[in-house]
Image 1 (cartoon, one colour):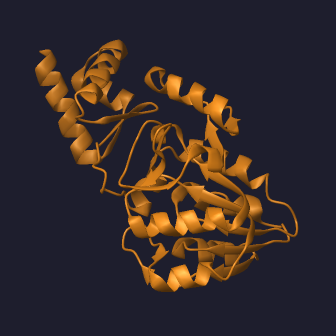
Image 2: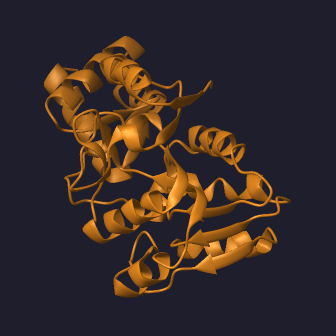
Length: 254
Protein backbone atom coordinates (compact mmCIF):
# COMPACT_ATOMS: atom_id res chain seq x y z
CA UNK A 1 0.00 0.00 0.00
CA UNK A 2 1.32 3.44 -0.94
CA UNK A 3 1.92 5.96 1.83
CA UNK A 4 -0.75 8.33 0.52
CA UNK A 5 -3.32 5.50 0.38
CA UNK A 6 -2.48 4.37 3.90
CA UNK A 7 -2.71 7.88 5.29
CA UNK A 8 -6.04 8.47 3.54
CA UNK A 9 -7.33 5.27 5.18
CA UNK A 10 -6.08 6.47 8.57
CA UNK A 11 -7.82 9.83 8.17
CA UNK A 12 -11.05 8.15 7.10
CA UNK A 13 -11.04 5.88 10.17
CA UNK A 14 -10.32 8.81 12.49
CA UNK A 15 -13.16 10.84 11.00
CA UNK A 16 -15.59 7.93 11.27
CA UNK A 17 -14.72 6.88 14.83
CA UNK A 18 -13.35 10.16 16.28
CA UNK A 19 -10.84 8.16 18.35
CA UNK A 20 -8.75 5.33 16.87
CA UNK A 21 -6.15 3.18 18.62
CA UNK A 22 -2.82 2.32 17.01
CA UNK A 23 -3.55 -1.41 17.03
CA UNK A 24 -6.78 -0.75 15.08
CA UNK A 25 -4.80 1.16 12.45
CA UNK A 26 -2.22 -1.62 12.26
CA UNK A 27 -4.97 -4.18 11.63
CA UNK A 28 -6.85 -2.00 9.13
CA UNK A 29 -3.78 -1.11 7.05
CA UNK A 30 -1.77 -4.30 7.66
CA UNK A 31 1.24 -2.13 8.46
CA UNK A 32 3.88 -2.19 11.17
CA UNK A 33 3.59 -0.16 14.35
CA UNK A 34 6.62 1.98 13.38
CA UNK A 35 4.99 2.79 10.02
CA UNK A 36 1.72 3.82 11.67
CA UNK A 37 3.52 5.97 14.24
CA UNK A 38 5.43 7.68 11.45
CA UNK A 39 2.20 8.28 9.53
CA UNK A 40 0.49 9.74 12.61
CA UNK A 41 3.42 12.09 13.18
CA UNK A 42 3.28 13.30 9.57
CA UNK A 43 -0.49 13.73 9.65
CA UNK A 44 -0.36 15.67 12.92
CA UNK A 45 2.38 17.92 11.56
CA UNK A 46 0.12 18.52 8.56
CA UNK A 47 -2.68 19.49 10.98
CA UNK A 48 -4.95 16.69 9.76
CA UNK A 49 -5.41 14.87 13.08
CA UNK A 50 -4.24 14.94 16.66
CA UNK A 51 -2.15 12.23 18.28
CA UNK A 52 -3.14 10.95 21.68
CA UNK A 53 -1.57 8.26 23.83
CA UNK A 54 -1.92 5.01 21.92
CA UNK A 55 -3.74 6.44 18.93
CA UNK A 56 -5.23 9.50 17.25
CA UNK A 57 -8.32 11.67 17.33
CA UNK A 58 -9.98 14.27 15.13
CA UNK A 59 -8.42 17.71 14.93
CA UNK A 60 -10.66 20.44 16.30
CA UNK A 61 -10.80 24.18 15.73
CA UNK A 62 -10.46 26.78 18.48
CA UNK A 63 -14.25 26.97 18.82
CA UNK A 64 -14.97 23.24 18.64
CA UNK A 65 -15.77 21.58 21.95
CA UNK A 66 -16.20 17.84 22.50
CA UNK A 67 -19.36 16.70 24.25
CA UNK A 68 -19.20 15.16 27.70
CA UNK A 69 -19.72 11.74 26.11
CA UNK A 70 -16.76 12.28 23.78
CA UNK A 71 -14.56 13.62 26.59
CA UNK A 72 -15.40 10.72 28.88
CA UNK A 73 -14.44 8.20 26.19
CA UNK A 74 -10.96 9.63 25.67
CA UNK A 75 -8.06 8.72 27.96
CA UNK A 76 -10.38 7.35 30.62
CA UNK A 77 -7.74 5.56 32.69
CA UNK A 78 -5.42 8.56 32.64
CA UNK A 79 -8.21 10.92 33.73
CA UNK A 80 -9.20 8.64 36.61
CA UNK A 81 -5.65 8.61 37.94
CA UNK A 82 -5.33 12.39 37.64
CA UNK A 83 -8.69 12.79 39.41
CA UNK A 84 -7.63 10.44 42.20
CA UNK A 85 -4.47 12.48 42.83
CA UNK A 86 -6.40 15.76 42.76
CA UNK A 87 -8.94 14.43 45.28
CA UNK A 88 -6.10 13.76 47.73
CA UNK A 89 -5.76 17.54 48.13
CA UNK A 90 -9.31 17.80 49.50
CA UNK A 91 -9.52 17.82 53.29
CA UNK A 92 -12.40 17.53 55.74
CA UNK A 93 -14.01 20.92 56.26
CA UNK A 94 -13.14 22.19 52.78
CA UNK A 95 -15.53 24.12 50.58
CA UNK A 96 -14.54 23.39 47.00
CA UNK A 97 -15.54 24.31 43.47
CA UNK A 98 -15.80 21.40 41.04
CA UNK A 99 -15.79 22.43 37.40
CA UNK A 100 -17.91 20.82 34.70
CA UNK A 101 -15.72 18.38 32.78
CA UNK A 102 -14.85 14.74 32.35
CA UNK A 103 -11.70 14.72 34.51
CA UNK A 104 -13.19 16.75 37.35
CA UNK A 105 -16.23 14.44 37.21
CA UNK A 106 -13.91 11.51 37.87
CA UNK A 107 -12.91 13.08 41.21
CA UNK A 108 -16.33 12.44 42.75
CA UNK A 109 -15.89 8.76 43.78
CA UNK A 110 -12.67 9.76 45.57
CA UNK A 111 -14.46 12.53 47.49
CA UNK A 112 -16.98 10.14 49.01
CA UNK A 113 -16.77 10.03 52.80
CA UNK A 114 -15.13 13.44 53.14
CA UNK A 115 -16.86 16.12 55.21
CA UNK A 116 -16.95 18.83 52.53
CA UNK A 117 -19.26 21.14 50.63
CA UNK A 118 -19.10 21.33 46.86
CA UNK A 119 -20.21 24.07 44.50
CA UNK A 120 -20.41 23.01 40.85
CA UNK A 121 -21.47 24.27 37.45
CA UNK A 122 -21.61 20.71 36.09
CA UNK A 123 -25.11 19.30 35.70
CA UNK A 124 -23.75 15.74 35.54
CA UNK A 125 -21.74 16.36 38.70
CA UNK A 126 -24.83 17.08 40.79
CA UNK A 127 -26.39 13.62 40.73
CA UNK A 128 -23.05 11.89 41.30
CA UNK A 129 -22.24 14.19 44.24
CA UNK A 130 -25.63 13.60 45.86
CA UNK A 131 -25.29 9.84 45.40
CA UNK A 132 -21.92 10.13 47.18
CA UNK A 133 -23.73 11.88 50.05
CA UNK A 134 -21.84 15.15 49.58
CA UNK A 135 -23.42 18.53 50.38
CA UNK A 136 -23.87 20.12 46.97
CA UNK A 137 -24.69 23.55 45.55
CA UNK A 138 -25.45 23.94 41.83
CA UNK A 139 -24.83 27.33 40.25
CA UNK A 140 -27.93 27.29 38.09
CA UNK A 141 -28.28 29.40 34.96
CA UNK A 142 -28.37 28.44 31.32
CA UNK A 143 -27.33 24.84 30.57
CA UNK A 144 -25.03 24.32 27.60
CA UNK A 145 -25.80 21.48 25.26
CA UNK A 146 -23.02 18.94 24.90
CA UNK A 147 -21.00 19.80 28.01
CA UNK A 148 -23.98 20.17 30.39
CA UNK A 149 -22.40 23.18 32.12
CA UNK A 150 -24.25 26.02 33.82
CA UNK A 151 -23.22 29.34 32.21
CA UNK A 152 -24.62 32.82 31.73
CA UNK A 153 -25.84 35.56 34.04
CA UNK A 154 -27.46 33.26 36.60
CA UNK A 155 -24.29 31.19 37.01
CA UNK A 156 -22.10 34.29 37.26
CA UNK A 157 -24.31 35.86 39.94
CA UNK A 158 -24.39 32.59 41.88
CA UNK A 159 -20.65 31.93 41.89
CA UNK A 160 -19.96 35.48 43.07
CA UNK A 161 -21.65 34.67 46.40
CA UNK A 162 -19.24 31.80 47.21
CA UNK A 163 -15.63 31.52 48.35
CA UNK A 164 -13.60 28.31 48.17
CA UNK A 165 -10.71 26.63 49.90
CA UNK A 166 -9.88 24.93 46.63
CA UNK A 167 -11.11 24.98 43.02
CA UNK A 168 -10.66 22.09 40.59
CA UNK A 169 -10.83 23.13 36.96
CA UNK A 170 -10.72 21.37 33.59
CA UNK A 171 -9.07 22.76 30.47
CA UNK A 172 -9.11 22.22 26.71
CA UNK A 173 -5.66 23.63 26.03
CA UNK A 174 -2.42 24.51 27.78
CA UNK A 175 0.60 26.48 26.52
CA UNK A 176 3.32 28.54 28.19
CA UNK A 177 2.38 31.70 26.30
CA UNK A 178 -1.41 31.53 26.42
CA UNK A 179 -1.91 29.59 29.63
CA UNK A 180 -5.18 27.69 29.92
CA UNK A 181 -7.89 27.97 27.30
CA UNK A 182 -11.39 26.68 26.59
CA UNK A 183 -13.61 27.13 23.50
CA UNK A 184 -16.52 28.98 25.16
CA UNK A 185 -16.02 32.50 26.63
CA UNK A 186 -18.92 31.98 29.04
CA UNK A 187 -17.36 28.86 30.52
CA UNK A 188 -13.98 30.60 30.59
CA UNK A 189 -15.50 33.35 32.72
CA UNK A 190 -16.88 30.86 35.25
CA UNK A 191 -13.52 29.09 35.45
CA UNK A 192 -11.69 32.40 35.97
CA UNK A 193 -14.10 33.45 38.72
CA UNK A 194 -13.74 30.10 40.50
CA UNK A 195 -9.95 30.47 40.46
CA UNK A 196 -10.18 34.06 41.72
CA UNK A 197 -12.49 33.07 44.59
CA UNK A 198 -10.35 30.10 45.70
CA UNK A 199 -7.43 30.02 48.12
CA UNK A 200 -5.85 27.34 45.94
CA UNK A 201 -6.70 26.37 42.36
CA UNK A 202 -5.86 23.16 40.53
CA UNK A 203 -6.16 22.53 36.79
CA UNK A 204 -6.55 18.87 35.82
CA UNK A 205 -4.99 18.28 32.40
CA UNK A 206 -4.39 14.99 30.62
CA UNK A 207 -1.49 14.79 28.18
CA UNK A 208 -3.56 15.68 25.11
CA UNK A 209 -4.11 19.23 26.38
CA UNK A 210 -0.40 20.11 26.25
CA UNK A 211 0.37 22.47 23.37
CA UNK A 212 -3.26 23.06 22.38
CA UNK A 213 -4.89 26.50 22.21
CA UNK A 214 -8.63 27.14 22.08
CA UNK A 215 -10.63 30.36 21.85
CA UNK A 216 -10.84 31.79 25.38
CA UNK A 217 -8.18 32.11 28.06
CA UNK A 218 -9.09 31.77 31.73
CA UNK A 219 -5.80 31.54 33.67
CA UNK A 220 -2.05 31.79 33.31
CA UNK A 221 0.15 28.89 34.37
CA UNK A 222 1.38 30.87 37.39
CA UNK A 223 -2.17 31.14 38.78
CA UNK A 224 -2.68 27.45 39.55
CA UNK A 225 -1.28 24.04 40.40
CA UNK A 226 -1.35 21.59 37.48
CA UNK A 227 -2.29 17.95 38.02
CA UNK A 228 -1.30 15.83 35.03
CA UNK A 229 0.19 12.47 34.12
CA UNK A 230 3.46 11.05 32.82
CA UNK A 231 1.96 10.40 29.35
CA UNK A 232 3.85 12.99 27.33
CA UNK A 233 4.94 12.37 23.74
CA UNK A 234 8.35 13.53 22.54
CA UNK A 235 7.01 16.65 20.82
CA UNK A 236 5.32 17.81 24.03
CA UNK A 237 8.17 17.05 26.44
CA UNK A 238 9.78 20.48 26.11
CA UNK A 239 6.56 22.22 27.12
CA UNK A 240 6.09 19.75 29.96
CA UNK A 241 9.61 20.40 31.26
CA UNK A 242 9.20 24.19 31.01
CA UNK A 243 5.95 23.98 32.94
CA UNK A 244 7.68 22.12 35.75
CA UNK A 245 10.17 24.99 36.00
CA UNK A 246 7.48 27.67 35.94
CA UNK A 247 4.75 26.41 38.25
CA UNK A 248 3.70 23.68 40.65
CA UNK A 249 3.02 20.48 38.71
CA UNK A 250 1.69 17.28 40.28
CA UNK A 251 2.57 14.31 38.06
CA UNK A 252 0.69 11.02 38.28
CA UNK A 253 2.91 8.13 37.19
CA UNK A 254 0.96 5.76 34.94
